[in-house]
Image (tube, rainbow, N blue to C red; front, side):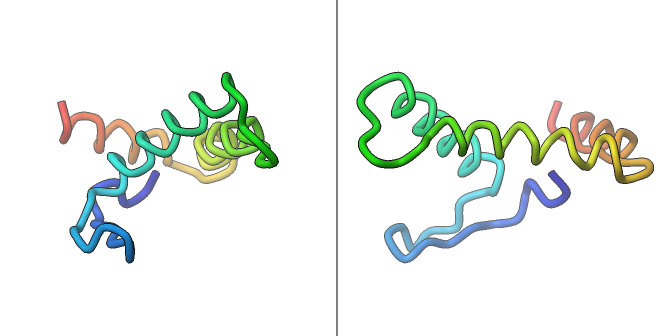
Length: 76
């Protein structure tokens, strides 16, 4: 939410991936796994946690709407 352009480097992929791309990919993976046979992992909890991760700052952190709007203008 606050640093979407920061690079994430995983041991599996030693290449820097922007945080927003990684997050979007993880949400797609969780969605596909939640719809299909997900095994023992509660993928719906990951989706709910991602939603709460967006809602919480918008409700409880002052001026986060302004920050989000600035980031959106930068990308689009």
